[in-house]
Structure formats: C-alpha cells, structure tokens
Image (cartoon, rainbow, N blue to C red; front, side):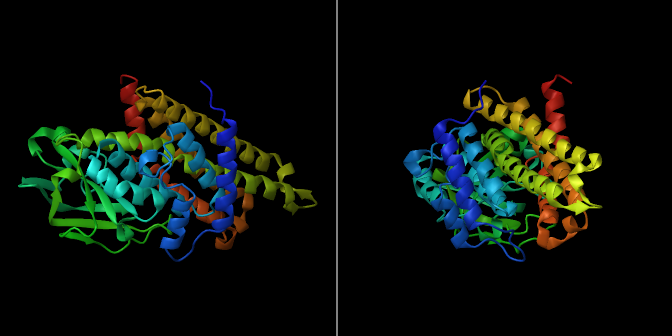
Length: 377
C-alpha cells in the first residue's frame, strides 16, 4: 500500500497549490462566490478531476483526485469555495458519470467539468436526512418520464445551480429499493428554488431549498434503473466522504502552517510562545490528528481505486478528518489567542467552516454507526 505521489502527481499538486493561492488569497466575506470564480476553478481542471476525459474531465481515480482536492484546500483561503466545488463534483457529476444515460452525460458533463454549469445535490429533506428510504419527494411515472413532487432542503449550491441531481420515492412499499435518482435542469417546468440560508460557516457557498411541483423529467434523465437510487446515492457518498474531505486535510495543512509560524514569531515575556510546552503540545496534537486523518483518507481512496468494498475505510476517514478539522481549528484559535478571535486574521473563519464537516455527508454519529455495523456490532 503506497501513497507517495508520483513525479507527475507532485507537479500537479504544486501547480494547483500555486494557482489557487494566487487566485483565492483570502476568505470571501459577506457574499457568495461568483461565476467568474467558478469558471476559474473549471479552467484549472478542478471541477472535473474525476469526470471521464471524453466528457472534458481529468479521468482521475479517487486517490489522484484526493491529492488535487487537498492542494485546493491548502491553497485556497476560502473553504466555502472548496466545499462548493467538491459537492458539485462528487455528489452530482460522479453519479451522473457513473449511472446516467449517454444523452444525459453528453448534455451535462462537459459543462459541469468546465464550470459553465453549477450543480446542486438535492437529497436531504426536513424529515429525511440520513435515511434515504424515507423520502417524501415522489416521482410518479407518466408517459415519457416522471413527475416529481416534493421539497429538498440544504441543497449546496442550490440557489445558483443550473442542474440538480435529486432522488425521489417511486415505490413507497419498497423502502430503499423504491428510490430513484434523476438529473433535472433548473429551467425545467415546476422547479422552484428558495432563498439562500444564513449559515454559521461556509458563507461563500449558497445553500437553500429546491421544490419540485409536477416537474416533468424525461426518462433519459433517470440515473441507473428505477429503484437503484439508494445504491447510486451511497456510491456518490463514497466519493464525497473520501475525496471531498481531502479539502479539509488541505485546510488543516494551511492552518497548521500558520499556527507554527505564529508560535515561532509571536513573543510574550521575552520568548516565542512556541517555547511554552502547553503551546507546543497543542501544535503537536494538531499535527498528529492531521497526519492520522490524512493516512485514513488516502487508504479509503486507495481501496476505492482497488475495487474493494471501502465502506469501513471511508467511514473511518470521514469521521477522522471532520473531527480533526474542528479540533485543529479550535487549537489554532487557542494558540492565536485574542487574534484568533478577530475576523481579519482568518482563524475564526476556519473554525466556523470546520464545524459543519461533522454534520454534512453523514454526521459523526452516523459514521460511528456505520463503523460499528462493519465491525459486526
């Protein structure tokens, strides 16, 4: 099991790191990302890393993709943009690439890879988050396709999305086997997009509700076969819980670099604060959590590339990275002290952006439940 980057991958990592540092040098405050910034991500190849090359993507495997997302997270000072791009790619483009029909792939994937289009994953509902077998949104078969009815919540990119990947109940008697996936254009009749939520963190990426009212979706925009939606969603969650969180590994690297530099240069009572054991120990704990999480994430991606059943590895990775993100951000605030609480320093922004990592893509408690089941408990 080798996780070293090849010479080519190392060069790509460095190129991405340099490019995003130049283009996104500071967190975005009080606005959402704009189309120009989104196209910049597309021009850098970051919106299509794992999309097949024939549709304009990079055609990368999970581990090679994670290396690039890690570079994005380390170089980009705004974690919201990193999250928006990753949700677009892993929760939307990948299920379309893997399970969409040829016509739907040809219609949407090139624009998703280039940044011409923005995608939103419309799965979560007010009374159905982690349990995909209890979706209230329905899809009723009609000649030529389906009529969607229902409301989705917490749709990342939703208010600005051009296309949605969504899931609905087609057979309420069949539980998770009665769920079907769809790709829906925003301009389809019956799509209504809600106003952006006001959030604690990830403030540069809009999220909101999407309502379908007798929204007709042609049969060629069904993902996979009817009833396969639950499995397709779990497949996309494998990509999201592994590769998306590489962005948080990169964020932790960025924060650790800043924290070490601050501990070296900030002086109190005639000495650098890093000379104090209590400060040094916090920094060491940050490094330990980061490297442990990184290795678990790399292993999860390696198992995906190897065609293994990665459920346990992915859950361990997601749990470790998300918890490390919150703990590391808290430690950084502590080392920076009062300066860490000031908005201009950017440290408190890291903490606010880290907190939702333990909630989306399956909460930490859900990951523990998955791990327990994989252990036979």
